[in-house]
Image 1: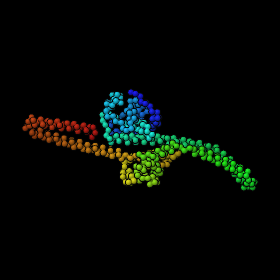
Image 2 (image 1 turned 30 degrees about the horizontal axis):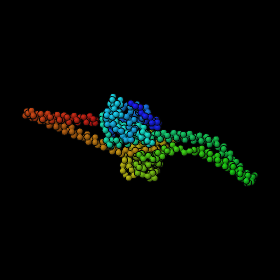
Image 3 (image 1 turned 45 degrees about the vertical axis):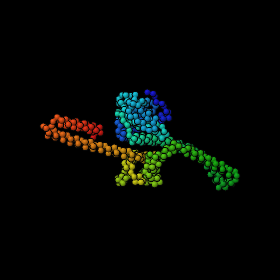
Image 4 (image 1 turned 180 degrees about the horizontal axis):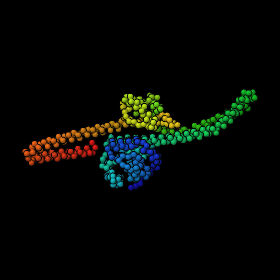
Amino acid sequence: MKPMPVDKERVEAVHQILQIDFGQFPEFQDIVDLAGELCHKPIALLTILDSDYNWLKARKGVDTEMMPAESSFCQYAILQEEVLVIPDTTKDERVKHNPVVCDDPRIRFYAGAPLVLSDGLKVGSLCLFDMQPGHLTALQKKILTILSRHVVFLIELELGRKELSLQIAETEAKNELLRKIAQMQSHDIRQPLTSIMGLVNLVKDGYHEVNDNWLQMLEEATNLLDMRIRTIVTESIGSRDMKVARFNRMVEEIEDYAILILDRSGNIENWNKGAEKMIGYRASEVIGKNFSIFYTKADKRNNRSAYLIEQATQNGIARDEGWRVRKDGSAFWARVVITAIHGDTGEVIGFTKVTRDLTDIKETQDSLKDRDNNARQSVHDMKKALQSIDSCLQFLEIKYRTVLDGEDRMYIDRINHSVSGIREIVDYYIRKYTW
């Protein structure tokens, strides 16, 4: 196989992503499991592709942690804007000679949605495999695309958190240095200030009259003091931290997730455009109110919001999933992560709350569950019908055994054969869906 072309900018972004400990975030595994379940595929992977290896950072159905980049299916998925589907790998020139196609596990189906960062770089894929040729419905492709966007958001949120933590540490170090500088320069401030006070006291006590020479000395001392103060203020404030500003701006502009800042009691201090789009309130309508206003009446009675704040305070993080209520009264299915914010001494000073609207996925899951229930009921009805047919045939054979001629027995045998065929089909679906 030809080696992959190297995109230095993309590989540099991948190396930053590989510093994330994906195992600390169960959301990645949840997304992979959900993709496999909703698309009915036995293998689902979250892959990050660098120049040498394809790293499997969350996986279902395999134990391998990495594969050579040159033999990865992901290298083709990142060339796409949409979901790449290979219905039959043995008929696709790109992969039909791939080792996992020719040898065990003999992959026959592949689908991958590229992981596209906000700057357009494609760093991996959310992908599915099967040992049988197959396809994805339009709805399943949409689900895979939506889930891949959730993966990218979680990745970029963690990268931003790491960058912000680094900037905070650098700022604290800078402030400590500036405190030391201020101590050293305090003498430079006191010297012109002492001169001004001395000149004023000379006039006040009658030892010197106000003349041009005295005014010139006072002006020089005042200008020197002003210059020293400006220098220290400039050094203390420094240039604006653009990285922090860019991160804050990014959070404000995100529209697919509702991101809230809460105080220690769970009252809303700030939120982004995504929250306004998802829930319907303007920031001015909710600032200062408790985030429980988005909860159902049942959850309010059970103090669900207070319980989550308590869990986040004790454990550092709280996760929840359930129905929430928009401003217009409509309900949406939300997955929520509340993370504690700690002060310098370790005390909890507030919380971040990130909410994802999973209504489409929830409705799809419910639809699939209804379909499975209907199928289960149909199989049950078929089994009952087969039992009735068996009973009737046995009754006929016993009651009319002496009067049945060869042709009659031939028809009964045909019916028995047909019933056996239907029974095999029913048994197949029982085994397939583990009912």
